[in-house]
Image 1 (cartoon, rainbow, N blue to C red):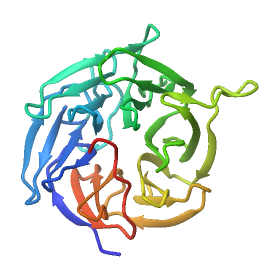
Image 2 (image 1 turned 135 degrees about the horizontal axis):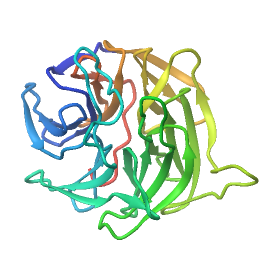
Image 3 (image 1 turned 45 degrees about the vertical axis):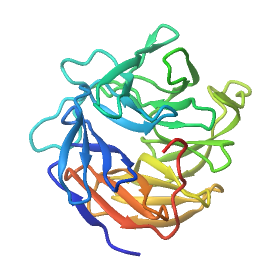
Amino acid sequence: MDDVRIVATGLGFPEGPVAMPDGSVILTDIRFNCCSRVTPDGKVSLFSAAGGGPNGLAIGPDGAFYLCNNGGNRYVEGVSMGQGPHPDYKYGSIQRLDRATGAAKTLYIECDGHKLSAPNDLVFDSAGGFYFTDLGKRHVRHRDHGGLYYALPDGSKVVCLAYPMLSPNGCGLSPDGRTLYVADTEGARLWAFDVEGPGKLRQPTGHAPHSGRIIAGLPGPARFDSLAVLQNGNIAVATLNTGMITEVSPAGAIVREVKMPDVFPTNICFGGADMRTAYITLSDTGRLGTMQWPTPGLKLHFT
């Protein structure tokens, strides 16, 4: 397996990479409150001054970008990870970013009368709606509950599917669309939900708050961040503290652990003609890396 090659440096806390057909990458930057474009030669330019805390990013059925905005974090000098909500934080949101101009339009700030706390990641299904996670804001001495939601890109409908969850982060759909995977940060657990239709998950039984089942977890200091699904159905999960990309089979077996040159690899996406070019956000050092993965990533809907 090839080593990681650094594409860009000088980023704040990058997340949410989307590989574009021209070889560039659009990514989010929580620390710098914006979305950036990285060209193949490593040049970084502003794509969208979205504000707040841009986190997960995906292309929707209309060709626009859809953004999970966590509302903003407070950063201090010398520490890469956010230290609780930004002083101006009010709530999180889902935004639509114009593909040509990067102009941001807010679609959702609440569900069922409850403010969104810190939307983190999203994935579109074949019907054109999207699942998204809300990590829950981490305060100095407490944290908000997290949850799992489904929404339509025209701003007309958002529903809560699973609540509460501890710290739902990355999410992705299996190749057949029948399983939704959600990485839970604290405790490094990978959940799987059975999908029964667009925005419909199998109902929980008994007193369970949701119908997810844990298929994999890691011991020690590991924490799960975002994820990407591969064409073969495996799930590549960015793993904090240990600095790994952990590939997990649908049955929960650890297929491989690939060491990254950073303790906070936060996100991975795939592009290139054969979908084997992996782009990884290296957020402790503010860099974007790339490498060739042994198997191709799954091509996302509408990309």
